[in-house]
Image (cartoon, rainbow, N blue to C red; front, side, top):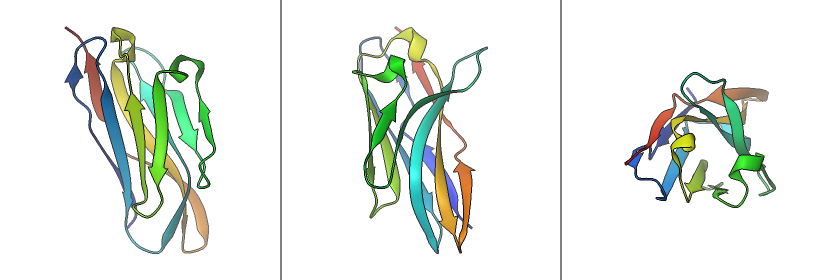
Length: 119
């Protein structure tokens, strides 16, 4: 069974940094585009950034210049480095990935990790 597991969420002070990780585990799969979403309290989920298997990235406007998405294909892991965090960055961050599992391409989601930016 293939699944995505996030880690790295925490309570951080304004101006601080945080690095999230999301690892795909299982067998017989290939990870294509992987991405990060977030959902702030009382708001809809929104895309943060995504990255193709070859390393092409795309960012939401609010993430440009502050967040960096990267991946390690050997580890089937995607990362999100977040700097200059503010209270508006508080929310549940979830990763998703387009996984080819035994010739079937589907989108998988992780369970999410909580990020709280507060002094």
